Amino acid sequence: MGWRGNCIAVDWGTTNRRAYLLDGAGQLIGKMEDDLGVLSVPCGGFPAAVADIQSRFGPHPVLLAGMIGSNRGWIETAYVACPAGIADLAPAIRWVVPGEIGIVPGLSSGEGAPADVMRGEEVQALGAVAAGLVPRDALLCHPGTHCKWMVLEDGRIARFRTMMTGEMFSLLKNGSILSPQLGGTIAANPSFIAGATEGLQGGDLLSGLFSIRARYVLGRPDEGAASFASGLLIGSDVRGGLAFDGPGPVALVGRPDLCALYARVLERAGREAIEVDGAAAFRAGIHALREML
Image 1 (tube, helix red, strand yellow):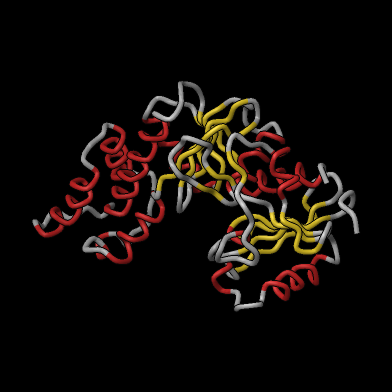
Image 2 (cartoon, one colour):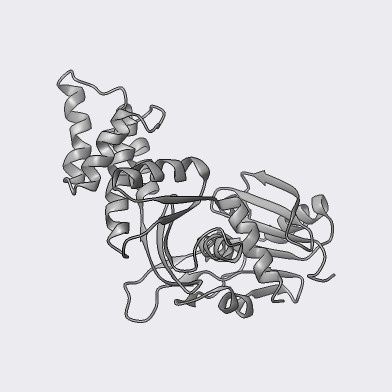
């Protein structure tokens, strides 16, 4: 078993896992996805869960990234402090089976910066750099449950910050007084743009959210309330993210549907967006790592 032939790349999150079979050149041969996130794996069940992936793709070496390396995953893997690039991650891989099954470390904020961490997004961001999909010096945003804003310098992640945008929307939708109004589909419609504009302009986020409830009880409900709330949160997110670095295009790496929403808000803010599919970037990141093994 070696790293110059086929290998398996696994992006293992809290609620799902995605596995890819790559050839020696990093090209996709096969893939699988299911809802067996790390929280769904029973105690002691990770060896069998990894063996299941290998049974589908063959007995190839495996690199895993994401929450699989957290204190809720298989084996907790230490963070690498920023600034960091692919060359810093490779020697810090935690080997479960030496040379055959390894867990990629996450990143932590550098010395003197506010406490922050990430697991999995760094592989996508650095993979996008390695594949030439984003500039080596850029502001990069990874939308998601915990949105990451990263400053890239010479192909390395120099610093980053996290916004709990996706999780906040989920909490509001599923466990707040706004829940009955937030059941609609989110789209980049006029309600979304109105919310995004308010968020970009620095409007009072908490007051803006409550206005959804107020309009409802006053008999003026907005059928696009979910889109308005999403736009308001993303607009606030983007406003904070853009203040993290200077002018220029913003690289969006992640789920295409989320990147498209953020691109609309960036357009509203007068900024160009470079949209990169997160799955492709992840595969590129794992390929760049395995070339160093």
